[in-house]
Image 1 (cartoon, rainbow, N blue to C red):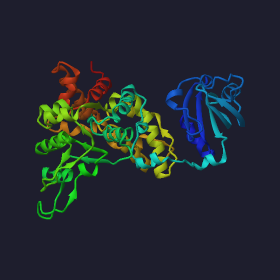
Image 2: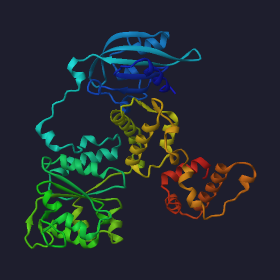
Image 3: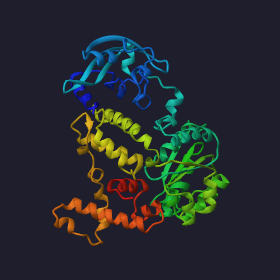
Image 4: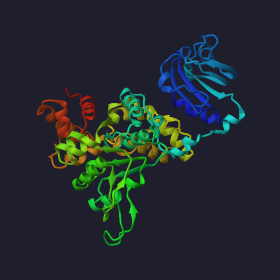
Length: 460
């Protein structure tokens, strides 16, 4: 609730560097800094902690926030030098005001203008030659996370980046496999060489073969002397995405090229030596790809010398609002807007949603909301309908089954009738299954979505 007052505050103050909101007892409910180069505190590390815990040098008498909470009177343009719990010193001019509801103090808000050297505000940064040569690719620092499982992925990347061993990345669609692949490249000894990426899905075998290995003039009608990706990426990294969608005949030739470290262009018998780090990715479990015949077993073993599994967003839900803040900051820059967060109703919707499209889906939803938002906070009305009404995704599955119209006859309306029908289907699935995993599979939904619906309908 307190964060809603932030929007009103921003309508008064056109230029601020940071905002901190506490409840009536001094515990932090909201924090944002627009100058992370000056204030490196992160909301995830300080949320719900007392202001004197974050700034150990402050007491209830010296903290402007605690004084305002006690007196109910605003403090304007007070100069402060604050030292954070991790030793960072911040000089700022602060204005602190009480937040009141029905004449009772329910919290306080502190807005800051940081005092720094004049040229710092020009955002002048000097890039090293090495950084420039990376060419705008992602690095391991671009992997935004606060979850342990993704931190383990980040720790693993630098350890394997400098070797020539092939790496197989497994992750559902939208989890960020290319981000991991680029980070492997930019963290290793080949970072100043080329990084070439190719999605292998839905490309006919003959065409993909010419793309990968190149062609010689006359090898087929219209063919010209042209290098393939193995040649172009020579000395660097070649990333083959969705390799489980590649035709088996091409997989055999890729295995040969990797094993022999050389390729021949189509129509040529002259071998071309290659020196590459091969990174590949699949969007289905590798063992299942092999069992179903989508991936050659011998190629799997060759590609998966090191395997990195990228967990889906539903398994690292701690990252959800961390990523929301990151994308909001990103699109504020892209679209020249000043949105500062999501409201409480959207928070609850995001917590309950199963995120089948993972991080990519979240990013697209935030971008879509930016296009229609009329407030400083993203609201429920700014979201796509399939998020705000989960039944939308399941209605097509109900068409073939007879709908009990008693709810309609009783005047409960279509939504109530659909809810009762969905509850019946879920109950039947639970009764006919030996586990929630099996029931979720029958219903073609994730286990997290099933748990949400069980809680929603009170099904035990």
